[in-house]
Length: 323
Length: 227
Image 1 (spheres, rainbow over the protein chains, first blue to last red):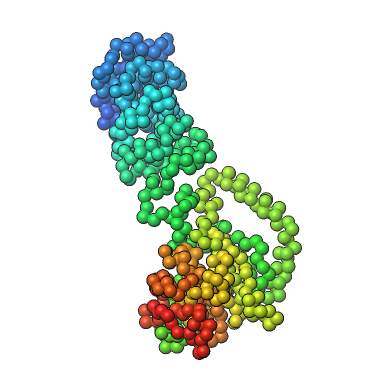
Image 2: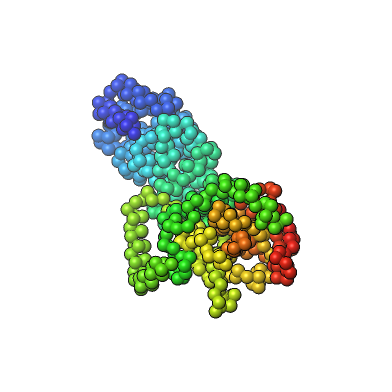
């Protein structure tokens, strides 16, 4: 958190100073592995952008006239440069319409995946608000048919596949991905089932985490009831997310087998609900007010410890009846 | 005993207000849940059982028929309700001689004559007198947990219930199954039972058909199966 915030501050400062030399140093110094990986691309983009940036800020005129000169085919560097410019602007001025206009003008259906990739890369370790905004923008693009699900998958594959690597430097990366992709559940822009497909790129260790984070973030955005509806109508089962050998009952898998082993049952023995005296018990001498107040009830958990000696004693006598 | 009776009378007096109290408690619980979003769902959700079970208490009373001496105590359908009941009744070792506890699937009476038991039989575990103090409660609880946890897996459907008899000659625990012809299920149930009760290998337990028990001449019916 701290390093990210400090980087943003640094960038802002640099923008105002328009000093390209300083900026190179400050950006390089933040040391995120994701940045290190993309340093040849990412940092260079920021640097090249820094000259045009303050101008667009000052008169709030987008750089369309400049960008329009760039036509597909688009190389990766250019795509990144454009993406960062659009997303940076969008997350500052909060104008999705302008962002969409820019995207429409600068990206074709063959290159929109790059926009997805670089916007994810840019926003992943920024702040929550920006991540949600980018997620909302992706949602809008899908709803307006500027972005297909397959293009979304293609564009996010690389980032998702590195989730485990990211986690070293960005411990909450799963939450961050959740913030980015949760808005896509709005308006059924992407179905839950397809989001599950999307998270397959994460790899088996973390894909359930990322999926869970998306769903949990969605619950924060649109409310748990709405998400419950989405879950219920998705046809997904708990076992689709967390594969297990048994189809055990759980609150989210109400059709699972209601089978409980000894240990689990004993763990619930003293839970608050288990200690509540049932209502309307008949008036009988066997009914008592609470557990463990009388009798031998407390020592029941050990089985077999004392048993052998008493069985041995009795084997010649009563117990042998069954033989 | 006398104090038990007083408590029960007090409970009776409290009953008219119970609904209000329950409503208040529910509202308080809901409020607490809202205030503490960290409260795990596990603390609020009961774990449903595959079957609904009924606990019976048998006590011979001179002015009643045998059947009327079987008293239904309560039914439950979640793990928590099972424990709530279990935690508020005396353990088997505290029953008076001649009394029984029975736990059967709801709708099945703890008697041979019941439609579900007619063709069935029981695995019988005989305890000696010393084992009432050391083992009886453990064994009975273990049998209950086996049943409510569906530990007999695909054979669980064959299980009707279980009975513990507290007797001066030695207590008995019987696990009742539905059909003496279901050999595989009966043997599997007996094997699980013996294993989970940690009954030593050299001690054998036997399965008897209720029909044989009904017409027995001696004190024991013949064993259809043993494990």
